[in-house]
Image (cartoon, rainbow, N blue to C red; front, top):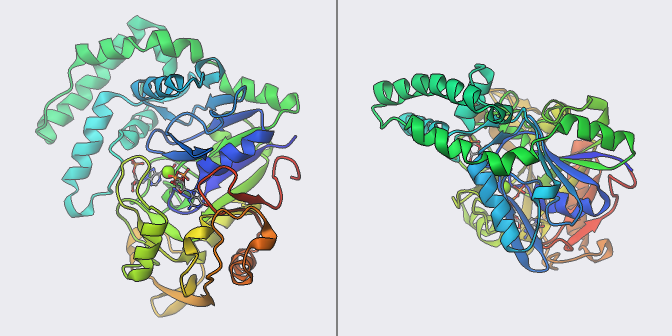
Length: 431
Ligand code: GDP
Ligand code: IMO
Ligand code: MG
């Protein structure tokens, strides 16, 4: 069977987790390849809600291998907590969870730095999740970070830690005038994770290559969204990793040709948590409708999500950069009952019409959306599982999105529940 990469192609929270969990029925393994526990992926199975942050969304199906690729930044204490939380519900994960030795470790001083730095930015704060993601990736690129593999040798770990902490504590106390992080305590708490973590450390790249050789089916699960990509997103209001499709290869250790069909997950409208430009943002009653009906609160931080119309311009960039083959539209039901829906099909920028978003937040801030208006629908789509029951006007909306992006919509989600979905084409089976 085939592989597929599932990516959020807006500003995150598109419903990736739900779709990955659904498709895992026909998969053998799910791999995360970037980001960390800044992600919050919600699965609702038989009415029961589970939010996963670091553990791949294959967790809820017995026997599915869950792999954490080298591109992921891992907070080991958080990971242990997440494993325990599942264990309490009789979901055993540790025997089928593999963590790459190449994963960069999120350390307590990364969390401190993330928070004090974003605070120090004042009005231009990014509004990060405060999980230490950015500082951890910085250390990785600066070649001073600690990795899962470093835990193998206590001596080596303590030496490297001492050096890197001296550097960060100097910044924390002398530049930010904040309390330094205690070395001894950090060392002890990190070493204490070895017993649980090291048995799960394994060569994810080798495992993935074997799975592919055996003809097994792998889902590559993106975190965040394309518009939060460090290179192609709304810089600097982005996360610190590449969220585009190519990251699936780099962040897990498999050839680019192996990742399979690239499925872009889009919400039927747009949301964003944190700061940064958002051309189609709504601050009127339509925005309130989307926020309340869509229950738009961050799955990681609980912050209210900003809401707006679907932005085809931003999605065009995602289709282009990620090489999206097919689309999956979630939360169609949230649009039920509004009199009209709008699609942003272009931007006015510097007196011209443009069809792709400019690079950089300052330019995007100046873009004014050009809308196309479509009729709304009163017949509810909520919980619908049959395509034939979707009202004509909602079908027209979906078709117009597909037409504008020149990509087919193969999955439609009409509710948070695993089964509240219409699968027109399964990328793992019909790919
Ligand atoms: P992710 O980060 O992309 O996995 O998405 P989140 O879990 O952060 O946010 C998506 C939210 O929408 C969660 O609360 C889901 O339970 C919910 N959700 C997913 N699909 C649908 C849908 O089709 N309809 C509705 N009403 N809710 C959905
Ligand atoms: P999932 O996988 C939505 C946003 C933060 C902030 C910016 C940088 O659930 O879609 P960071 O902590 O990564 O340095 O914060 O990125 N952000 C997300 N927004 N969903 C996410 O993940 C996000 N992960 C990070 O709100 O604006
Ligand atoms: Mg989320």
